[in-house]
Picture 1 (tube, rainbow, N blue to C red):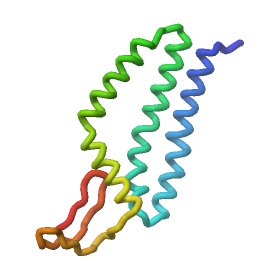
Picture 2 (picture 1 turned 120 degrees about the vertical axis):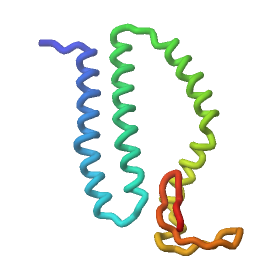
Picture 3 (picture 1 turned 180 degrees about the vertical axis):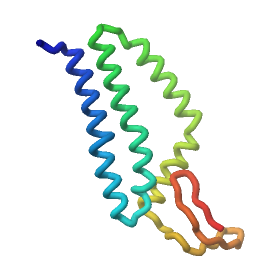
Picture 4 (picture 1 turned 90 degrees about the vertical axis):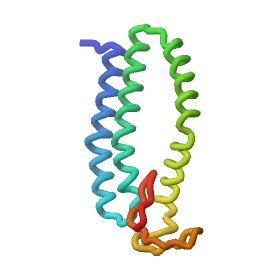
Length: 135
């Protein structure tokens, strides 16, 4: 039985998806449980949600391409939509990446007492990707 290029691409996408979701994520979860840093506990769910979707999208594009579907119109539409959505959520994305930098660089630790510019004080309770909580 000779496998067509379409079947090979579909199987490769499937096995890459399985490898990432079953093996790579499993070992990353073990690693995050062994470390005390907080950033890997926050970034792991993001990777776990985003990377499989990207793998499936690339597999779908390769599958459509192997069937001879012209994707030029789809790429132009996606490019325009990406520009509009990116411009609309630029502040949210800026906060998101600032949160990632805070998690990686962590100038603060849990329980630190912070004094704000207005003179109020608070204790740091949680650092997240988008929100830092204090009481």
